[in-house]
Image (cartoon, rainbow over the protein chains, first blue to last red):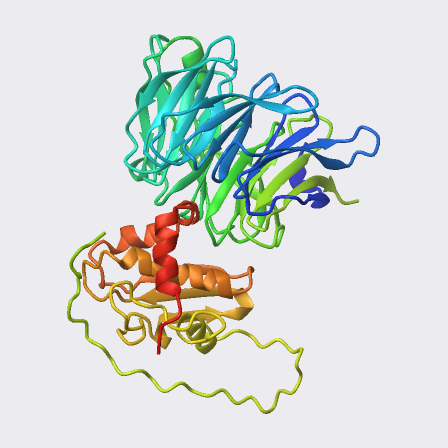
Length: 346
Length: 165
């Protein structure tokens, strides 16, 4: 599908109102038409799509658990559990019981604000990160038990986001120290080490890195930063799959000049459209250029820029995993969550 | 908290005469005037309704009197909904620079329309760890977390409370 040859538009499907403070993050449930959002109002809202009317409404509010801002939320691969990371220093695990959600566990240990939480592909591990500069790996045991498996030190500043690779148990983190770190347990014995640091010397970012996202295959990655750029990276992961050892990530290209304020979020869709959300209130969509330049390698072009997508900073953009349609969720400082549809204009 | 004052003998400048704004040409109550430099300076230092004088955390004098903030400190483009405030801490190693910067941001956040993008920085050459300070003052997430800290909020509110005259 060559999107660049068509006229595409991002149409606002619905505006979800309810949060009483900025919304930091939105996360689609991997298996059902459910969206979770979390906010500076200390709550998490669960939005569900009606199968009849197709419209979204707030099914439940998870409150009275976190005592401070809920910064990010992440569904387990099964879709049954939701992890929420908070400035109160804890990460809560919620179970969807149908009518309501129950907080089944609280992960404590970080010294201050937890910024991000991520489940690995099999749902056997969780990772969290914090302003305390550390990344924690938690093992998911039976009976609602979670055990701290590892505390990873290495970042020299506040860690903004953690993300497990989509197919391998390799962990990525990005930070206020301007770097992206890759953590791997070579002998698969749970002993994770930092095997790579992507910094300015390796064509990395020159300011805080806010987010990371992988393509479906897991051989490409996009990162976004306070330096106003998005960077694309690649790795020869077949090497890792065949047990030949660690395959390092290398810089492919840098997308600059599209946003003039901090880019807080980026997400790579399953059909290869990269979305970005920034402090300029705009959403950017990018696709890989058809023209394969063997000298300079792959390049990416702007598909479209949706200006004033929100009235204030956009903190999160997330593509829906649903194969049916190209739905995008965005969360903003204006307290709104918006659902968009990428459509071709006739 | 700090027991002794860091800057015991600040240089105090004379306060500028407040310019009276006369806008006789505009009689329409509902017209919206673009926000300009003077208005933001007023917001920072003067207005009753908003904050009059942001007090220097260590001294009862206002930040204007200490030349921490002057009219030139404010760069504004109302059309672009953008403002940048540059402030000069009173002592090179002023440890209160974070509180001042945070207070200025809070004051502007409370006073300006939500469409505004706000950048705060220390005047180039005025602080030992300028780059680090600027980065912290402009990291939205750090600012949000700081403003959830009751101790910090108390210090900021003290800084922003109206001065006695």
